[in-house]
Length: 301
Image 1 (tube, helix red, strand yellow):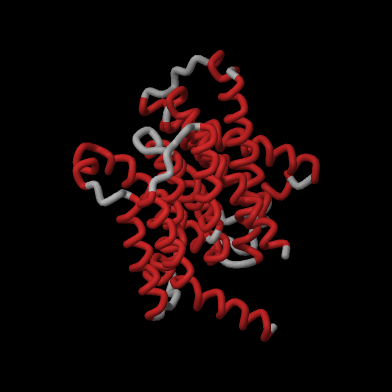
Image 2 (cartoon, one colour):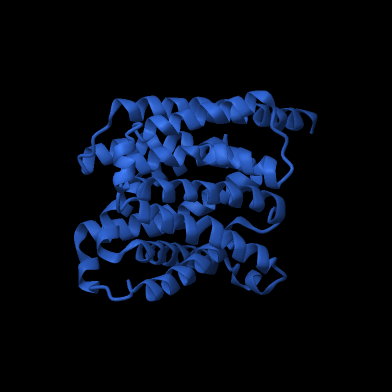
C-alpha cells in the first residue's frame, strides 16, 4: 500500500513540474532550470538530514563513482533535456512523451543489465513506439521545420531515466534513500551551475525570480518536484523495483495534460490521446512479466 501511495503522490507532483518548467525556462534558461531545481531540492533534503541527525552518514563509505553517474543520468542530463524540449514543444506533449520511460527502462534493462524480455514485452515496446508516432502527430513537415529539436531531447531524457533506474537498483540498493536523493541533487546542481556558465546563462535578473508565478514555480519544482519527489522515487526503486518506480509515467501525463490545459491554455489533441493510450498499452505489456515475476518472488518469500 505504501508503494502505491508513493506512486500516486509522485505522479501529482511531477505532473505539475512540467508546467513549472514551462514557466521558468524563458527566464533562467534550460540549465538554470536544472540548477535551481536541483539546488532547492538539495537544500530541502539537507534540512531533513540535519533534523534527522543523518549528516554524519555522508562521511561513511559510499559508492561515489556510482552516485556521481546516477546524479548525471537521473538529474543533470534528463532535466536539462526536458527544459530544452519545453523551449520548443508544449508541456503537455513533453509530459506525454515522458510516458515512454518504462519502455526504455525495459529495453536498457535487457541490453545493459541482463534483464530478460519475452515476446509479449517486445510487442509492448513496439506498440509503445507506435504511440510515440501518434504523439508527434505524424506531421513530418513540422518535424523538418524544427519540432524534432523539442521531441528528441525529451526522448533522450527518458532514456537517461531508464538507465539510471536500472543502475540504481543494481548498484546502489544499500544506499539510504535520503542520502541518495541529496547526493544526486547536489551533483545535478553543480553540473547545472557549470553548464549555466559554459552556455552563457549565468546572467539572471534575480529580481525576476521574486515574481509570484516564478517564485511558486521555484518552490514547486525545487522543494516538491525535486526534494520530496526524489525521496519518493528512490523509495519505490529500493522497496519495489526500477520498473515499478518508472510506472509513475503512467499517471504523470494525465495530471500534466490537466495542468497544462487549465493554467497554460495548451490544447489537448486527439492524436495525443490516441498516442498516450498506445504508450500506456505498450508499457503495460512490456512490464507485465516483470510485475508477475516480482509478485511471485514476494509470495515465495
